[in-house]
Image (cartoon, rainbow, N blue to C red; front, side, top):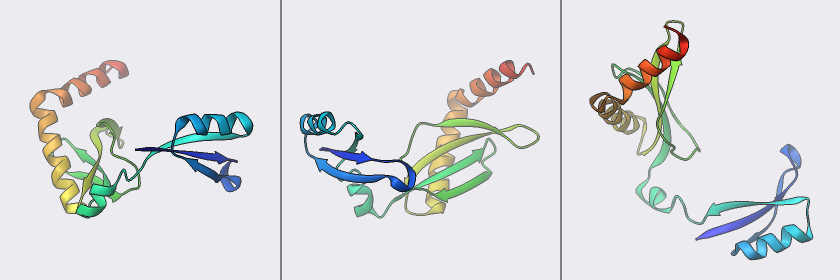
Amino acid sequence: MKVYVITEGEYSGYGIVTVFSTEELANKFVEMYPDTRIEEYILDYYEQRVRDGKKPYNVWMFRDGTTQHCNETMNEPRGIEFHKVGLNGNIVVDVTVFAKDEQHAVKIVNEKRAQLIASGEWDEFEKAHKSRMGE
C-alpha cells in the first residue's frame, strides 16, 4: 500500500505537513496549498527485511573479487552500476544489496560479480568504456 506524504520547505526548513492514504486526497490538498508537494512511499516497504534482520549494504568490488568498500546504507537497492576508479582506471561493480552483515553482503556481490563475468556483461562494459575514452 502506498502513502502520500505532503511536505513543504527545503533543507533545514523541510518538514512533513500530513499523510494521506489516497493520491486523490493528496492532490486536492496540494491544489489548496501550492507551496506543498507530494512524496510517495510504500507502507512497510522494509517489513520483511526488518523481520529477517537484513539491512542494505553498498559494495564496490573489482573484477578479481577484491572489495573496494562495503558499508551499511539507508539507500534502497538499485540496479548494478559500473565505475572507473583509481589512477589506473580499474573498473568496479557498484551494488546495494540486503544482507545480514558486511560479510554476507560481500558474498552476495561476489556471486553477482561472477555472474556478470560469466554472462559477458563485465567485458561489454569495459569495451564500451574504452571506446568512449578513446583507449
